[in-house]
Length: 360
Image (cartoon, rainbow, N blue to C red; front, side, top):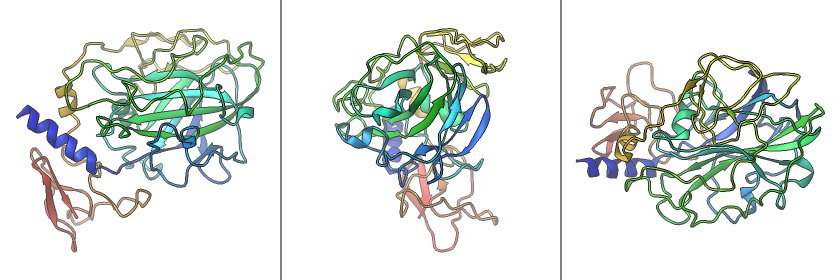
């Protein structure tokens, strides 16, 4: 039965099309506005499709590595929060398919490099500790945060990245989601970026954390890429959701100190020092069985996970009809499902597997 459940999850994951991009950033919990537009501050791709070729130049900043008109001013020690979404910034957006389990990372490089060469430094990473970074990201409404190091003044590119592993048991199956955010550090920090790694270049399709089988049992996960820079300030937990990082702790002197919620959760792997102090809780570090973690990702009632191929990955998801009928492409049945089973006119409830039926 357990093996059957894993196979059902794998089948559902391969049908899922809930891709994602970065829509905005927040600085010290202040929304900087929509950034993924022509007049924004994010070098955004034309759609939310992933990059799958680790040797492609699109690995740098996605398919649209062109400077935008706006840059966000920050200072060393600022808390910078990245906000990911599938379709839009509404509260109902599903962020990314819950089957797209994997790590979340953040890199930085000088803007003058345009991301070319050995210039990328890893500031933070969040992987698997019994739960996945992507699961935490979804629970936190698409947000994950870092504390900006006390960098020398200048312009930089921040590169948040998600690696989705739901098809990664086959070479070339891992999905990479990333954009580059343009920032300008205005404080007179003392840290300069060391030599880094090239992107593309630092990843190989055969790396253990890229060629990885979610469905065959595991107790740990090797996060791909370089180690986190020892001058990084780490990740910051937001909205009482754990944001685990292997970043080395450094107290970052800042003219604008990031606030830390009293409910914030800090990884036991590396405590993030911040000027504002409230006693952090500790993330549980017990490792769950892989099958338990995977079973929790199975569709439950009712879910925002879209698990069939839609006409395009960028079209808006239909909202459920007010009559109680299930909208097209939404779940209408399956084991443990308790929601509505009647589809809107023109759609029928199709069984993809025992765990997931969908209006198509």
